[in-house]
Each structure stands twice: as C-alpha cells, then as structure tokens.
Length: 283
Ligand SMILES: NC(=O)c1ccc[n+]([C@@H]2O[C@H](COP(=O)([O-])OP(=O)(O)OC[C@H]3O[C@@H](n4cnc5c(N)ncnc54)[C@H](OP(=O)(O)O)[C@@H]3O)[C@@H](O)[C@H]2O)c1
Image 1: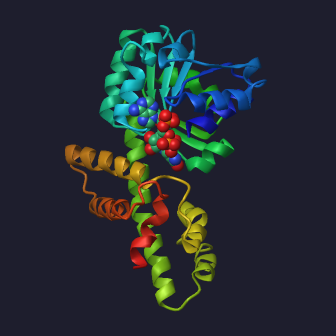
Image 2: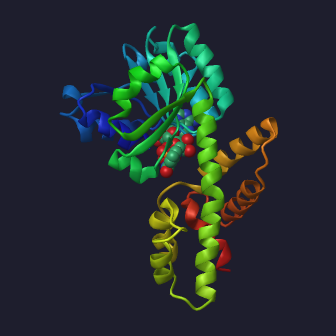
Image 3: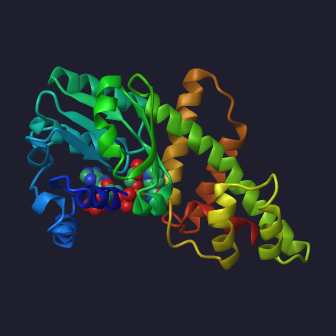
C-alpha cells in the first residue's frame, strides 16, 4: 500500500525521502521514480533519517509492533521528527497505540494523525483511497493537499484514535458481507445456477456491493493471490473484538467470521485475499 501511495506523491512533484525495512524495495522505488518528486527520491538509511527536515512524514507498515519499532528508539522516525511536522500513520493499528504515539509526538512539538485507509491495493494504485483520520484537526487540514495525491476522500473523524475506530467500523461492515457473498455463490453453484449470471443480475439490485463487483468475479474464478491478505484481516478483526470487549458493542457475526478466517489460515491461506472465505464452502 505504501509503495503506490508514495508513487503518487512523487508524480505530484513532492520531494521524497523513502525508507523501507527491506532496503532493496526503497532502492527500486527510487529508481522507478527518479526524475519525478521535484528531481529526486532519496533513500534513507533509517526512519529517523527519512523524517529529518520533512514537513510531513507518512508511514504505512503492518501492525502495532511494526509501527512502534518504526517510530520509536534511536533510529525511529520520531528521533528525526522536526517540531511542527505532521506524522501521518496509514497503518491499520489499534486506537491505543495511536493515542500513545500522538502523546509522544506532541512531546516533541509535532502532530500525529492516525489515518488508516480503505480501498485496497487497487485503490492505492489508482489514487482513489479513502482516508479516515484522528488527531489534531488543524494538522489534518494541513495534510489535506498531501492526501489529495492518493485519496478520493479524506475525513477528519475526531481526536486521536478516531481514525482507527472508524476503520474498525469499516472492517465490521466488510466481514459479514464477504461471508454472505461467499455463501450466495456457493449456494448458486449447488442450486445448479451459473454463478456469474446470478451475480450479473443481482448486482443490479439491492444486493449490490463493492465486494460483489470487485471480488465476486475472482471468487468465481477461484483466484485469491492478490488483494487484502487474510492475515491482515485477522489482525483487524482482533482489534475490533478487543475494542468491542472494552466498549460493550455486540459483534457476533464479526466474531464468527474471524473464526472462519482462522480456518482459511489453517489451510495455508494467510496471504490469500479475504474473498477466499468461499474456499471453506467448496469442500
Ligand atoms: N493491502 C490492502 O488491501 C490494505 C487495504 C487497507 C489497509 N491495509 C493496511 O495497510 C497496512 C499495510 O498493508 P500492505 O498490504 O501494504 O502490507 P505489506 O505488503 O505486507 O507491507 C507491509 C509493510 O510494512 C513493513 N513492515 C512489516 N513489519 C515491519 C517491521 N517489524 N518493521 C518495519 N517494517 C515492517 C514491510 O516491510 P518489508 O518490505 O521489509 O516486509 C512493508 O513495507 C496494514 O496495516 C494493512 O492492514 C491494507
């Protein structure tokens, strides 16, 4: 996700310093975008070096622990953060770590926005993501032109953590829907219908959804080697279930779908797209 987002920033002419844990990926990015980004893309040796002197520092890593090691410590991004800088985190992580990092950034005179995204790999490549952000509203307003390079919509949702909480709502809404789509397709097959024709007609009615349009056809083909990994979805549903225990929300279907994804992982499908739930119904 971070690669294509940074690519849009380069094409929009923003001068960039990039860091990735696997340095070869940062170097290959710099080669691919040389000549854009106001002339050059600099590969930094550490997150701190990438952050130094920047008005905006953008991060997209895997989960809480990866975010923590990228931000903190002697070589972490916060060690190089200028006072007045805005740190934008696009990782899907917990609301607690967002609040803790926002406090840490504030102690250095900088702002931290938790700003997870929706729209998938394809949305990142097309520059059509949705950004849901929490943190200082004035910092969000300053970051708007940056988001415009890769997002179709960016919304400020409230104080630190509100971006991550909104992303949890997003994942709750997706989880049950993908399972329902998988069940519909498996049912269509058993009923002797042609699944593609069934989808074609019902996607013009009230059952229509992004998942149906974008994942229905690939579910029918049995193609799952792309998209949003089951391992990441389990991480996200874990965040939802922990938050629901705290706030008392009832999420029975989400809890069930989390278990179904555990079964996909047990089949070796941790890196498959989340639409692979349908595999469980084919046995
Ligand atoms: N893919 C999607 O459709 C999608 C959609 C919305 C939100 N998201 C969220 O966006 C985030 C990134 O997803 P992705 O699909 O881009 O994942 P990904 O392809 O696995 O990339 C993860 C990135 O984080 C880095 N990383 C992982 N662990 C690290 C650690 N301990 N220290 C430093 N860097 C570390 C990886 O570095 P290496 O290159 O060295 O491995 C890589 O650059 C996740 O939070 C995910 O939930 C993804």
